[in-house]
Length: 245
Image (cartoon, rainbow, N blue to C red; front, top):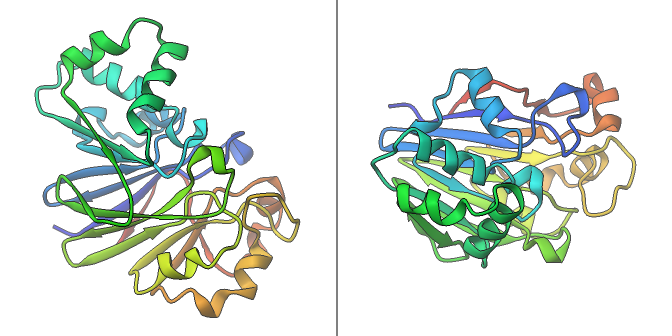
């Protein structure tokens, strides 16, 4: 089976351009992995015809709602669907406690009920590769708001390597993330404006030669980048778009 990446959601926190929040679907012979699961992810799945019950694992980059806020709804949906097989939820240190807090804020009293119905395994990601149902995932710290535990992800599936920046300003970790990747999906929040803790198109142009990936695709575009979309020097991901690796 060909490894495929689908941008179910390619937008920023605020739905700029009418785009769903960040959610990448990686499908392969052994399963289906979500990279980030923003608050709009269930709607994005429905819009793209993806059954939430087919998701085997979720790996998140950091603790901002547009990147992990959809996890409680996903688990509750799988509870209602009477999911029989395990679900893996992976992310930075503290992933289980952060999801519990989100559950109690959004669906008070439902955490224990949902977790009795759905066998959820929580995995903390780091420099050591962790196996997530057929995908080998490592996390590399990047520079965003420190309290969100920001990381980029490198995902090896079969003979393909996918890298994803999450949210970050320019930092040397991006060179390590992209190195040798068949596909590097990178945020590009602004065109040339300096937005704290985020990447601009200008940043990416200045460091383009350092990003040693076979293919670079940008997403998480804010209003400024969207206004200049036709001028961007990189491929742009759109909601529902599928990329064959």
